[in-house]
Image 1: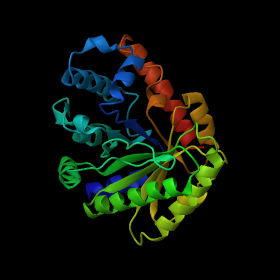
Image 2 (image 1 turned 30 degrees about the vertical axis):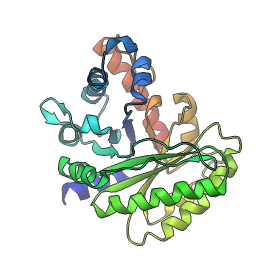
Image 3 (image 1 turned 60 degrees about the vertical axis):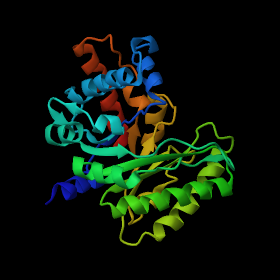
Length: 296
């Protein structure tokens, strides 16, 4: 079995969840602040990225972070380009931790139109996918945001996601399609109903290809079961979306078949000021609770 097929089997059927370690330039200062590092700790972007990489390396090196409970990790391009203990980040994750590496490929969100934010243009995507494949990346992730139950905006999100997913599949990578429904959407359930209908139509058109879906935890338990059961879906993962870890885990446990792909909920409670012992204990608590919710 090739490495890619071994990774596909793990992501598709093993117990566990995906760690989202992909804060990019815009969200890094907030992530560092939550970690106990104020924005006067760096003077330029390179210094900021050095600090967030140190945080991520501390997480990845921790004994609490391993393939026993974690299926994969989503990286920011800057993290993919760096190293951990003398190995490329993707190589370290797979060889040392048996954690499947993914890459965030979107360039952020466009302004809202028709109640939704599609992705900004992605110039150089072909080159990035080629670099990712060479680095040992298994799949990608790209995020759009739905803010209102507007069928035009939601259709624009799904159409764009599927168009880019086709390019990613052609490059030999597995795309994670992330049409996030904002948890503050005034009619979240209606937006989810519109999204599900469009997703199912899009999935039916994929033929033998397989994608992954990263979806907001729904208002109705088990709502995305049709996606989970679809032959063109390798796995459905859930984003925490701003919910606390406790609420995200509670909602996730009520949606059998979905597994976590949490970012803020994973790192909640971690601090740069903690001793390694306290840090590892806090991360183990987070990983244990998210893992339990993901296998319910």
